[in-house]
Image (tube, rainbow, N blue to C red; front, side, top):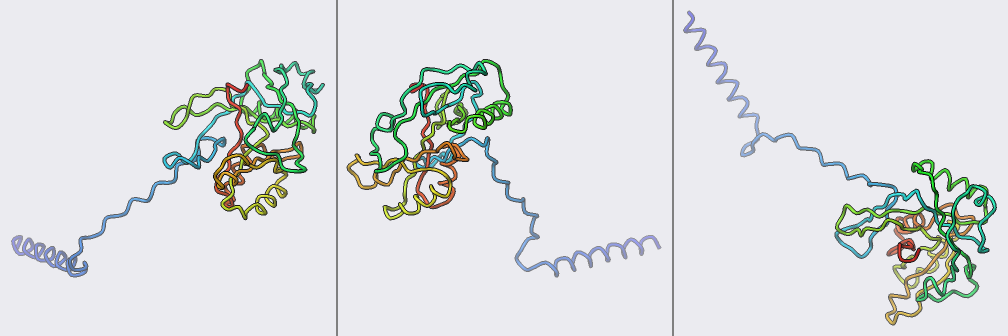
Length: 250
């Protein structure tokens, strides 16, 4: 009896295996579950620029340097509100377009001619949040100034160079895709509170004329780093980058 039961069990198992093979498509092994595609790597920080001329490194990353800030004013003197805070300021320097970016020719009727800039330094250690709040408060109390952060460049990648002090100035650059795109640049600048101040007019090759210099103003809602990202991410332009002032210029 036990032998009959055992043989019956073997028969049932054989029938089940045969049924499984009939159901499976001919010539194909059962498919293994697919591993989902990895999520794209998030940005390391909110402070980055697009690298338009390097195929291996699309972005360069930066971190806030909370010890300093960039200040641009109409007159070479520190606003009273800032002086009362015991914030140190370096010597004011002329921000003349002809000196700062000599290879660009100033456009007729451009708003930008003379401003003065300095480096603010803070003695106390500030967190990123405290630092940004301080810059926002200075701007709120002094509507006629342009203030922007300092950055430290990412040194973890091959592309990056070691730069501890990197000032986000009031100027940024945009490269057109075509000489006929000047109207797009003018429209984008007007819509976002930036102004076109100069065009590259010295390089012999005509493609160099595609580069334009723009500036933020006292009423701009973004700094030059943020504007460069905004203009490039619009897809309307070939490249856009802020005018950083590095250690040797400070």
